[in-house]
Image (cartoon, rainbow, N blue to C red):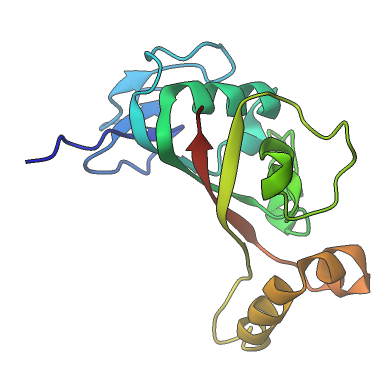
Length: 186
């Protein structure tokens, strides 16, 4: 029998998840641990979590690079970090006055080793010696009856993300980014 996988729902808010340790800055029914995510280190030992879920939280924090180092510290080797964040073209990225950061398809390339990079970043690109491997990245568009073209745009722009973000095509706003990282420890 295998051991139980440890999962953390970081900055959970009202999104309480079964099977996760739900952590937030304020108490809401279902929150297991209270913690100000801008105060580092987090109240966990090294190498604890098999999965860390960050749903629309990183854009609110003061120092994304330091938080990524902390997620690396508390994540197990080969553990996953799942990040959902507003895409920089989203109206929601700018609507919330508590947002401090905006993300692109390449934002998390700064936390991978040189041989794992999916973009051409300069030699000084690395913000940390702690590294991740990118398992997947996806730009998400709002969908629905009134936005039928977004199904096609999402498929197309995920196949040409640099062209989408770097040209006039970004006038078609995306909603979210979903990035899945794997913790790489030596």
